[in-house]
Length: 162
Image (cartoon, rainbow, N blue to C red; front, side, top):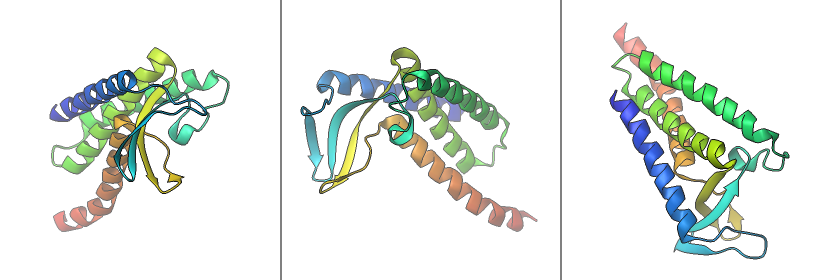
């Protein structure tokens, strides 16, 4: 149950940070973009992404909202059940899944409520920018990395147990 609580904390932190950034910054529009530089390679910015990762399907005309809501809902349900069914010894897998679940639900709330996801973290090197993201996206990315790490470690652990 602790892992569901971690997922809930991610959702709350994600929603709070999106609301705070939406109050702090004006929405970035062509020719007018308010930013706050935190580090030479890191800025805060306010963007609305109606698409998926890296703004994929952002300009699809509106149908993508409910498609992405459906996909996110199904994936969140599958991950929720998977998290419930794993063995208590699979801590890294459980941690990975709770991060992904928290991030997916955080972005799902935005899509259902507003039709877009609020992005506000921007990493760049000189004029080369990584697409803006948010706390939910970061949790999903770290969770995916942990999931990959778990896949590499699991065969070694299973051989040791045999």
